Amino acid sequence: MRRFGLVLALLCALWIPIGLAQGDLLPSNQDGLADPVSRGRLFDAMADRFEALYWDPSRIDWPAWRAEWRPLVVRAETPAAFDAAMRRAVAAWRDGHSRWIGARDDVSDVTPQWRFSPPRDVPPIEPTPPGVRPSGETERPELGADVYPVDGVGLLVLRAYPGAAADEAGIRRGDVMTRVGDEPLDAPGLGWRMLDVVLAALRRGSTDAHVTRPHVGTIDVTLTAMAVPEGARDAATLTLDPATGAALITLPTFDAGSAQRVHQLIAEAERQDAPVLIVDLRGNPGGSVLDLALAAAAFLPDVPLEAWLPNEPAWTVAVQRTPQALTASLTYARGPFDGAAFAMKRLQGPNAWDGPLALLVDGVTASAAEGFAALVMRGRPDALVVGETTAGNVESVQRVTLPGGYAAWLAVAELRHVGGEALAPIDPSVVARFDVDRFATGFDEPFALAVEALLDLPVAVGRWF
Image (cartoon, rainbow, N blue to C red):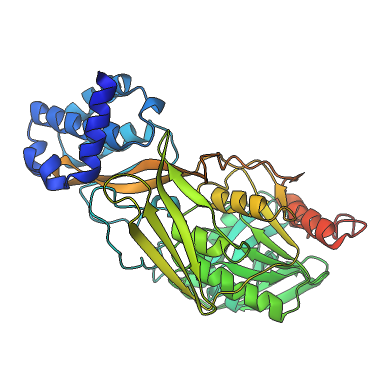
C-alpha cells in the first residue's frame, strides 16, 4: 500500500504544476522558519517531495533519514542555520549529485555535474541554450593554470587555461616553474607557498619567470598580470606531443560549449596531421548531457543513451545530423508527454574523427564523462581506454522547486545504455596511474602508454629517456 502511495505521489509531482502541488500550501521561506512547528512542517513537505522525485527511492532509508535530520532542521532558528542543516541533510544521501541550493536563485557555485536539469515538473519546452558557467573569475591577477608543487623541483603546470597569464606567456602542460623574479620555487619545503610567491609577484605587475621544460631545457618567460578570462578554466585544450605528433584533447568538463570546442579541436588536430587522437577525461566530473551527446557524435554514428528510473526509461537522447550542424535533443519516454522533446541544443560546423583513438580516465572521471567513455567504448571497439577505474556515478540531476520558495539539485534518473544496461564504472583496457613526480620529469604514464599502443611503438616515449 505504501508503494502505491509513493507511485501516486510521483505521478502527481511529475505532471501537476508546482504551484498546485505543494508550493501554495506553506508560508513563504521567511514565515516558514518562524518557530519549530513551522520548520518541522517545512521539512516534512520537502522530504515528501524528495522521496517522490528521487530516481531510486529504495536507495535511501527515508524514515531513518527523516528521523536523523528533522531535529537539526527544527532547531535551525535563522535562515543561515536552516540552509546549513538542509545542506548537510541532502549531502547525507552521498549520491555525488544531489545538492541543496536554498532560497537563492543563483547557481554560480554549482559545479558542472549539477547543471543538467530536465524539467520533469512542467510541460515540455525548448529552453534557451545555457550560457557558459561562471567559474569564479575575478579582476585580481591569477596565474591561470592548474598547478601542483613538487618539493625541491618547482611548481608543475598540469594545464594552462587558454588566454590566461600562463598560456599567454607560452607556459604549457608539463612545464615546471623554478623561479619567479628573484624568488626560487625549487627550494625544499615550500609546498603550496610556491603558488603564493607567484601570485604575490603578479599582484605587483608583470614578472619574469624561469621554466624548465622536460627534454628541452630552461626557458625564460614573462608573466603579465591579468584575470582569468570567462570560461577559460573549463575550456578544452589541444596539445601536440613534440616527439610523436599525437594530439591530446584535454576535456575538463562537459559544461555548456564544450562539445563545440571538441569539434573545433578535432579540426585543428587534422590540420596538424596528427596520427592519433587522445581525449583526456581525467578529473572530468561530468556536466551537460546535451554536450556529452554532441561531443560523442564526433566519434560515433549514433549516440544510444537513455536516462532510467529504477525499472524503465524516463527520457532518451537523439542526435540529428546534417553536413552543417548537429542537433541533440532529450525526449520523454513515458507519461503524457511521451515522445515530446523537452530540451535540445545545436552545434554548428561538426567534425568527425575516425582515426586511432584513446581515452584517458581516472577515479574522478564521473557522470557525463563516464557516459561519454562508455558510449565510445561500445561504438568504437578499436578505441583504447587507459588509466584507472572511474567513479561509477552517472546520475542526471534536476533543479527541483521546493515548498517555501527553496530549491535543490536532485538526482532524478541514471544514465544507461539503450535497453537499461549500466554505463559505469569504466574499467580501462590498460591500467596506468598518473604520478606527479614522474610527470615533472616529462613522463605521463597513461598518455605515454596510449601513444605507445596506438602507434605500435616498441617502448613508451619518455619512460627512460
